[in-house]
Length: 304
Image 1 (tube, rainbow, N blue to C red):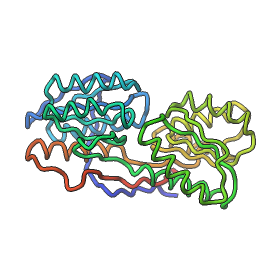
Image 2 (cartoon, rainbow, N blue to C red; image 1 turned 60 degrees about the horizontal axis):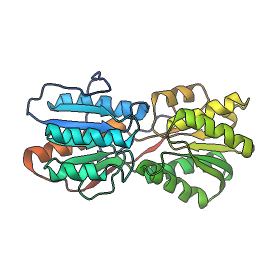
Image 3 (cartoon, rainbow, N blue to C red; image 1 turned 120 degrees about the horizontal axis):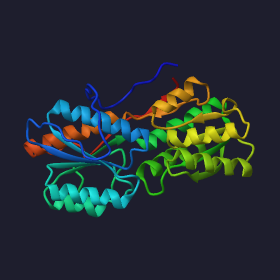
Image 4 (cartoon, rainbow, N blue to C red; image 1 turned 120 degrees about the vertical axis):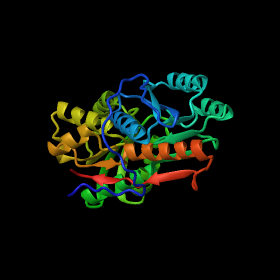
């Protein structure tokens, strides 16, 4: 199959900018500075998002300060507080969980700094815009893929993301909705915190308790790759199972080429961040709010 590149938001992204885990500074033609913080650069998805956001910020002629939250809400909270103290013009954040960053986000808005969320939502109405993939639909797409590959019957192991993260909640909701309306059965669903190492450990334990299964869904590529490693370590050929991840990372495509992974869900992280930057910059310049407070990209399975 050809890689499906279908999105409801189209943003031109050009070039590549190298970056460090701390803050990155660039020349700003408009004198606009935006702070950006992501959950953690140990996740390839957020590496791609940050790289493409930096490239697009350079194209826009704005200064983008980036921050790695190291998968800790407290670290991300401190980053937002630091951005407020620096009096940045705007903040772009992919919050660790729906609730953990709400106080910091609302403090920023109270200080007159607009905030946009990307990929993961925050449980507050103070956000200027949320731009992300429709994670519920992405979960549905993953379920439909498994059902089709299994011929409508079979069993599946589900690996969930970080508890409380909107992406984890939404992907599970969409996946469970479609699977539960089919003759495919979820025999177990357990969190692996979006982590490759935890995905491997969890899968090793689950295979002992549930040795008979037909498919595995990982709510991100890191977890499904960990699950595949666990299968291989146990002497099981992952090609004999239906496997699908989420995020369309470089490693996922490598595993697909090797025949170890069947598919992944592409949700275009760079386009999400670029669109959010467009909204923030326009608001900073004109005071104009976006027509919609939530904008979604439609994620779909890719197989090569």
